[in-house]
Image 1 (cartoon, helix red, strand yellow):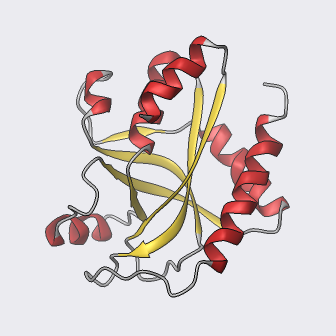
Image 2 (cartoon, one colour; image 1 turned 90 degrees about the vertical axis):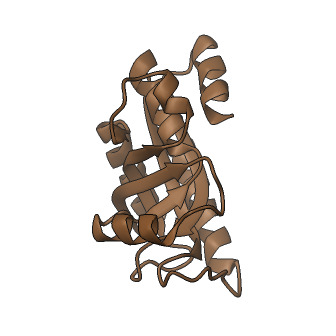
Length: 170
């Protein structure tokens, strides 16, 4: 869905795109509401393989990732730049995959980033995704947060930062 929408937005003239989403936490030091600006995505979904030759990763635009990180900080948030695991099979992460990606330092898992980055690479459009930690798989047991306050606060910061960044001339 995100790749399709990205294609349509590019036809309409979009030059930069920021995906704002939440995702599953993979590392024990990440809490619900923590913000990860994704520099690359593991391509464990189907869409990206229709666009680019097979490779493990696809990267976001580094300059746009840096801009988003700074804008988040300017808005009073904190964030890390890191890697996400994109899969199109929600709730199907296996213990073996989680352990493997944890050992590689992958911070979060979500459904859309690899598709967006792939369209961006192919169409020469700057893309980045920002993932707010939501539920956690870090202990190999699915844990949902008791409250959403920190998650909602972080989503608001990311939303405002994206407006700041996308409102600037390319």
